Every structure is written in structure tokens, then in C-alpha cells.
Length: 357
Image (cartoon, rainbow, N blue to C red; front, side):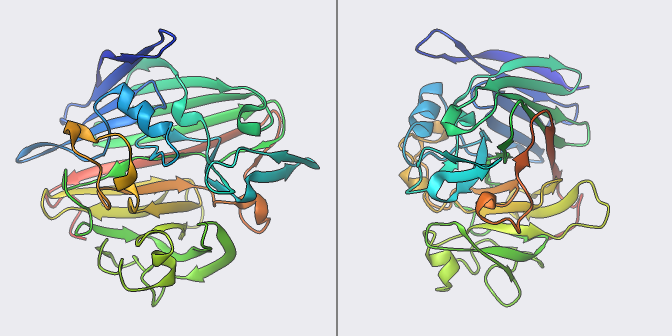
């Protein structure tokens, strides 16, 4: 049975309390979550050498606000929406009506306001339930949304993230979690190994929006199917990696098994700590981002240490970016009265529990 601990983490200018909730299981895995942005602040993995915190974050509420309200927000650890990733030209059409959004990433719309929301929290069993609403017109999107996020910590060292959203009007939705992982517990991630179960990726343009071309990874630096160090092919002059700051910021099309509810989409490991992580999801894509611009974060990381380029990697399970511009992509339209559901599971291992990558 999971154990819960809550403690104050800060207060908004309006006097609303920011709390930190720590969930731990009998095996020693522990997760820290904030009611601000549903942020995953820490994931402590037990090893022979002690607990290792494998995610990036900040030490104070003020630092999260400074980060998230900046033009180069990292969205570090946050639940992201209404539309994770980009909407090209910050405009979309649904139900014959055109909606203009805030252009917050050049001329495009990126991520939205969910990382800056406060959520009502309930804890029961092995579950932390966080709920909020998004009013019609927020960020320019139609529909009043009811948002539900569940973090479930199991006894076999898995953290399951369940998302459920309903709307009273036709709208679009794309949800993810934007945690940055560093399985070494510090330094850069270039030597950590990663396998992505994807034979194709979405080609991007110079604004990191898909061109519409779904290309094979074979024979390119995008090929992670056999597993390799993250940094092995990161600086080869390949146009797709050079145009996004010298790294990866691309959506991979997950090779999904027939009839599978959740599919294994990624496996990462650290030789230094012996920690491995496998990622399973119901979503069709996973965005690999290697922290190409983390050094621009205006707030310090944990312990007051500045964020560094390649200091973490994100595996953002999601629908495809810019889907409203590409009707051939899986739809992100949520009809009035319907419910969008998605889930992602992070499973942690140490030593030889899951083999070698």
C-alpha cells in the first residue's frame, strides 16, 4: 500500500496554498507532486548506493513560476495542455469555425496554460487525483473543460499517469507530461542509453512543426530502434537535429502492436546508477526532446545549480503536433459530451531486473 505525505510548498499572490504531495511504495520508490501544474517534482529510485532523484526541477514555487511564465518555459515536470506541442500559425478550425490562439512560440501556439493551473487534490489507496477546469475561451480554445489527472504508484515500481478530459463544445485536445529525466542523477544525458520503439518519425520544418512527411528512421540519426547513447548521433550535421538547437525535438510514430491498449514506446538506462526506465502509452506518438535549450531557463535547477544544455531528456507521449493542419494525422478533435482518455506508465528497474540495453 502506498503512503502519502503532504507539506506546504508556497503560496500564490492571492493567498492560495501550493502543496507538495509525496507518494512512496513499500519498495522505496517515491514520487513528489505539486498541486501547481500537476508537476512531478521528484522521482526517487532506490539503488544499492541509495536513492537517486531522476527528474529535473526547481526547489521553490517562485522558481517554477519564474520558469513557466518566461518566454522559454521548460514546462519542467508539468501536465501540459490544452494542446501539448505546437499548433501551426496558432490557428485551427473545428465545426466550421476558425479559432485564433495566442502565438507564444514564434508564430505558433505551444502547450497552453495547464502547467500554470492550480488543481484540487484527493489522495486514496495508491492514487493521487488532481482536478481542475478550463473555461471556454481560455487561450482562445472553445469549450468548458473538466480535467482529471491520476498519478498511481504501484508496488512493482511503476508510476501510471491517467488523463481524462470532457468538454461541453467541440474542441481539440492533446495532453502530455513534460518531465525531464536524468537517470544518472546529474550532469548531461548524452551517455545514457535510449531505445525508441518507432520505425518512423515526423519530419519537422525550421519552426519544429511537422511538414506532413512521415519518414523512416532507418539509416538516419533518428534511429533508436536498437538502443544507443543519446549523444551518439546528436552532432552529425543531420539537418533535422541541427535546426532544433543541435539535438532532438521530434515526434516518433510508435510501433503499436495489434490490439494493444498500452504499447512499450521507450526504454532508457544509465550505466552509472544501474537505473532503467520503460515507458508504455496508449498515445500514438512520443516526442523526444533532449533539453537543447535548458541552459536558457531563467530559474536555477535543484540545489541552485543552473540548468544545462542536455541536462535532461523528455519523452512526451502524445498525439502528433500540428494535427489540425494535417487531417491525415490521428484526430485530436474532442466532440461535445465525449471524454478524452489517455494513459502513460513509467516503470523503473535497477540492476539486471530488465536486462541490458
